[in-house]
Image (cartoon, rainbow, N blue to C red; front, side, top):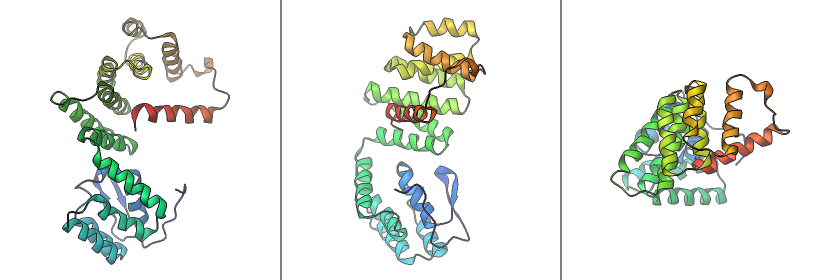
Length: 260
């Protein structure tokens, strides 16, 4: 996939609002981007007759719209609705199209709870933290009646905490991270507890409550280094020699840990 894609087709005079990401689109390329980057969000709010009608009326793609409507009428799988859009924009080559179809099939073959988590993760990526948090809460509530692996449920609690931190809901985030640690004491989860404690508690309370989690020295030092930076004393921190590589590594570690 190229880093930048030009919009070569017709631009809609009346943009189409995609509710789940809170964004309006005006071109077929923008619709392709949504389908490709936020696949877990393709649900009934997107797969309905309104979108094909917009594709025909505003973008002038009658054949594409007809194929999308046929997929809806025949209750075809999601691929029958989405792939004509990619073809109209020449967004994917044959190899990429096949890979996307496999990814789509795998997504719908997952357990409902896994699909819900992937939907929540996609909402986090597009900045819809409140909606993501609600989905994570739904999974946690349903776990009382369903058997879910502890590691999976811990990752849901952790991701819920991440969304809450981004909304500055520190008390809620602390509960989510603590729940993640109770289920699976990963260093990432413990460090997150320490970070939120440090951001929301006085220093004496921080040390008292942090000690209860018995963090190892490396996790404790990482958390305190980040807290020092956030609190404004960045001058005492030794920055990595290659900051860009360091950031890329941290981002990769986050995605591996969270599945986002």
